[in-house]
Length: 320
Image (cartoon, rainbow, N blue to C red; front, side, top):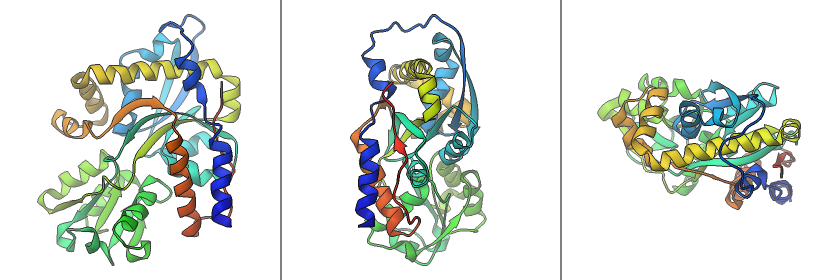
């Protein structure tokens, strides 16, 4: 009964998802906005997932909408989202898992758009000298991942898809930026992490790195979040923000090499590394029912794994 309550609780609020996105694409407004400059703070994960943000900033698309965007960088969407919940940034970038966990506690935030997805971003990287060349070899091993993030849910899903249990491994909570060194220093035998940290780990390990195939496990999305009060007070600013992000996604599709150069410079990667990783991501603004399904799956997992004892109450969006 508890699992069913969780699903119903999420469905009741996520089905409200409509967001500024739909108003924006049916508004017929011009690309440039003439009005007062509005200042917003954006918490952005320092990763490839946030490419549209780096492009919009570099190409001046926020300025076209009379927006002054102060970007604060975080090493995870969870950290960005928590900062927003604590009264920090106005807009947060975050994957579904931290949203799901916080939905068990509060009901004062909205999802207003998904802006990128990937089935290849999160990866399982292991040490060959730990005897790991396949998923089954992870049994009894130490696996590092940031607890409370997509990495934790991804690991659970990965093990399930390989007919294993979470109890088959020892999960070690390590921050994203520290995972490559932790793996290299033998603090753990494997890591579950997103880019560019996965690529950094492979570079450190060289021929000793084993990349375990996992593209069948999870279709990751990255989403824009705001607090309920902020959404109600700033609907026009959010629509203008989405116009800038939409222009950035179109620029990405039409200017692949230049986009790669901009993001590579921002993340400190070389052009060759960026070119290899780039096609793992699909850049587009959306708000789909599949997000609801993902949140439902994650809620079931959180309850069955005894990571929570209450039903979700807080996943919402707003029709501006």
